Image (cartoon, rainbow, N blue to C red):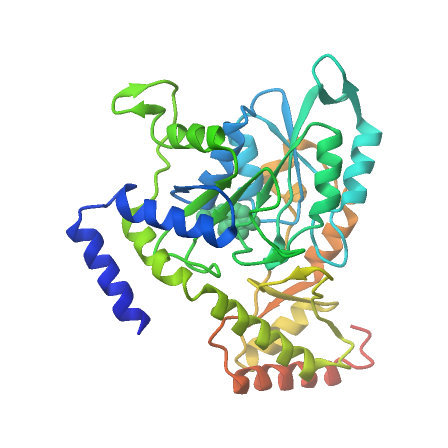
Length: 379
Ligand SMILES: Cc1ncc(COP(=O)(O)O)c(C=O)c1O
């Protein structure tokens, strides 16, 4: 039983006093790197720290721009701001809710020019260098990475995958985290691979970048009390790593259970046109961290489902460019229409590996009742 395995792993960690970084973290780094087929993994304290450390490893900071999607959890943009770079948003694709390569090209064409001297793209209005792009594999489906990588390469930008919601997801046979230049994961308890607290990981194929991250997350020391830079304290907790080590061996089965749940939802809801179910795009393996459908009358739908005892939620109700925290960036309503429309309509249906057939049947029956009731109401 997994509980016994985890209890034992916790006990072992305590016995070895491997509380921070240490042997369990090392073991988990090795296992997760192998799982994703990437050379180097560095355990960190959470996903936000993983994104931040990844950007710092590429010396991204003041007078730099990092592009990302407004349809994500705020941590993606916070990590950019924390480096003193400026987050600039690019709208999403309607079919995947992920950063749109077309919009990315458009932003570059409209706002930027190439500086041969600096070998960098310059945003003319903001007078800043466009150094990186962070595609977020939202809800567990990998973004259109080939096109994003091509644009990034042409413009000397690095691609940092925000894979915080995509443990085990695939794109053309490659695991999320193994596609861009560098990747960040979160092991927040609700993730497909979740700790019993917080945790994160950076993946890179470059040993020098891995080393920079190791130094940065440990107060900038390359050896004990020799601080080559001013860093931060982002080391991974040993007990979390020990737990994640056990859970990693179950991840594929759990993801498969999620995918089977989606199959059943899809079967039962085919023909219910008041709700639009998420699509798995070709060449992708979606791991359904979040199962986000779209409905026009979302408040009515959520209220109905709540009364019937079915919990739903929203990821995310306000796109980042319209958050009060990012008012200073100067983006108005209408700046990213697809994100705004999607944010107004997405609703997350129950999704976890242990969901039973009976629970899915009940949810779908209630969705159908709601659809029938709202027939003719124009909602
Ligand atoms: C897309 C995305 N990026 C970053 C994060 C930040 O991860 P953490 O909560 O571990 O800091 C999360 C987690 O919630 C996330 O969903």
